[in-house]
Length: 112
Image (cartoon, rainbow, N blue to C red):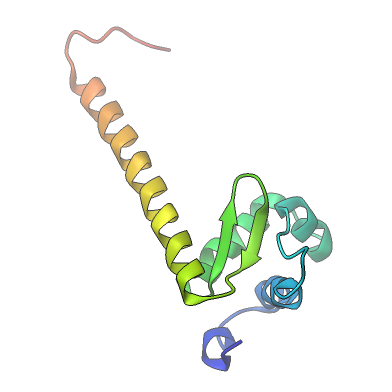
Protein backbone atom coordinates (compact mmCIF):
# COMPACT_ATOMS: atom_id res chain seq x y z
CA UNK A 1 0.00 0.00 0.00
CA UNK A 2 1.37 3.39 -0.93
CA UNK A 3 2.45 5.47 2.08
CA UNK A 4 1.11 8.73 0.63
CA UNK A 5 -2.40 7.32 0.64
CA UNK A 6 -2.33 6.43 4.31
CA UNK A 7 -0.53 9.38 5.87
CA UNK A 8 -3.75 11.26 6.75
CA UNK A 9 -5.78 8.26 7.86
CA UNK A 10 -6.62 7.76 11.52
CA UNK A 11 -5.90 4.46 13.28
CA UNK A 12 -9.45 3.10 12.90
CA UNK A 13 -9.42 3.60 9.16
CA UNK A 14 -5.88 2.31 8.91
CA UNK A 15 -6.98 -0.87 10.70
CA UNK A 16 -9.73 -1.39 8.12
CA UNK A 17 -7.31 -0.91 5.24
CA UNK A 18 -4.73 -3.24 6.77
CA UNK A 19 -7.39 -5.89 7.43
CA UNK A 20 -8.57 -5.74 3.81
CA UNK A 21 -5.05 -5.64 2.37
CA UNK A 22 -4.03 -8.65 4.49
CA UNK A 23 -6.89 -10.63 2.96
CA UNK A 24 -6.46 -9.28 -0.57
CA UNK A 25 -4.44 -12.24 -1.82
CA UNK A 26 -6.62 -14.93 -0.28
CA UNK A 27 -9.67 -16.80 -1.53
CA UNK A 28 -11.62 -15.16 1.30
CA UNK A 29 -10.81 -11.52 0.49
CA UNK A 30 -14.36 -10.17 0.61
CA UNK A 31 -15.46 -9.02 4.06
CA UNK A 32 -18.95 -8.11 5.27
CA UNK A 33 -19.38 -4.78 7.03
CA UNK A 34 -20.52 -6.64 10.16
CA UNK A 35 -17.16 -8.46 10.30
CA UNK A 36 -15.24 -5.19 9.89
CA UNK A 37 -17.36 -3.59 12.60
CA UNK A 38 -16.72 -6.47 14.99
CA UNK A 39 -12.99 -6.42 14.15
CA UNK A 40 -12.80 -2.68 14.92
CA UNK A 41 -15.15 -2.81 17.91
CA UNK A 42 -17.54 -0.37 16.26
CA UNK A 43 -20.81 -0.27 14.32
CA UNK A 44 -21.62 -1.00 10.68
CA UNK A 45 -22.56 2.64 10.23
CA UNK A 46 -19.10 3.74 11.40
CA UNK A 47 -17.49 1.22 9.03
CA UNK A 48 -19.51 2.50 6.07
CA UNK A 49 -18.54 6.08 6.87
CA UNK A 50 -14.88 5.09 7.25
CA UNK A 51 -14.90 3.26 3.90
CA UNK A 52 -16.50 6.31 2.28
CA UNK A 53 -13.75 8.55 3.67
CA UNK A 54 -11.04 6.09 2.66
CA UNK A 55 -12.34 6.03 -0.90
CA UNK A 56 -12.30 9.83 -0.99
CA UNK A 57 -8.68 9.65 0.19
CA UNK A 58 -7.87 7.41 -2.78
CA UNK A 59 -7.84 3.99 -1.13
CA UNK A 60 -9.25 1.45 -3.64
CA UNK A 61 -11.86 -0.34 -1.53
CA UNK A 62 -14.43 -2.14 -3.64
CA UNK A 63 -17.79 -3.46 -2.52
CA UNK A 64 -21.00 -5.07 -3.60
CA UNK A 65 -24.27 -5.73 -1.85
CA UNK A 66 -23.69 -9.48 -1.66
CA UNK A 67 -20.06 -10.00 -0.67
CA UNK A 68 -19.08 -6.90 1.27
CA UNK A 69 -15.81 -4.99 0.97
CA UNK A 70 -12.43 -5.88 -0.49
CA UNK A 71 -9.21 -4.18 -1.48
CA UNK A 72 -8.96 -3.80 -5.26
CA UNK A 73 -6.55 -6.32 -6.76
CA UNK A 74 -5.90 -4.17 -9.83
CA UNK A 75 -6.48 -0.80 -11.38
CA UNK A 76 -9.10 -2.38 -13.64
CA UNK A 77 -11.01 -3.72 -10.63
CA UNK A 78 -10.89 -0.32 -8.92
CA UNK A 79 -12.10 1.35 -12.13
CA UNK A 80 -15.00 -1.09 -12.41
CA UNK A 81 -15.97 -0.41 -8.81
CA UNK A 82 -15.76 3.35 -9.39
CA UNK A 83 -18.12 3.01 -12.37
CA UNK A 84 -20.60 1.05 -10.25
CA UNK A 85 -20.44 3.74 -7.53
CA UNK A 86 -20.98 6.47 -10.15
CA UNK A 87 -24.01 4.63 -11.54
CA UNK A 88 -25.47 4.28 -8.04
CA UNK A 89 -24.90 7.99 -7.42
CA UNK A 90 -26.62 8.83 -10.70
CA UNK A 91 -29.65 6.71 -9.77
CA UNK A 92 -29.87 8.44 -6.38
CA UNK A 93 -29.71 11.86 -8.08
CA UNK A 94 -32.51 10.86 -10.45
CA UNK A 95 -34.65 9.80 -7.49
CA UNK A 96 -33.94 13.10 -5.72
CA UNK A 97 -34.88 15.02 -8.86
CA UNK A 98 -38.14 13.09 -9.10
CA UNK A 99 -38.99 13.85 -5.49
CA UNK A 100 -38.17 17.52 -5.98
CA UNK A 101 -40.37 17.60 -9.08
CA UNK A 102 -43.28 15.94 -7.26
CA UNK A 103 -42.98 18.40 -4.37
CA UNK A 104 -43.45 21.28 -6.84
CA UNK A 105 -46.52 19.74 -8.40
CA UNK A 106 -49.42 21.85 -7.14
CA UNK A 107 -51.87 19.00 -7.69
CA UNK A 108 -49.84 16.49 -5.70
CA UNK A 109 -51.73 15.16 -2.71
CA UNK A 110 -50.00 14.65 0.59
CA UNK A 111 -48.19 11.32 0.72
CA UNK A 112 -47.58 11.28 4.45
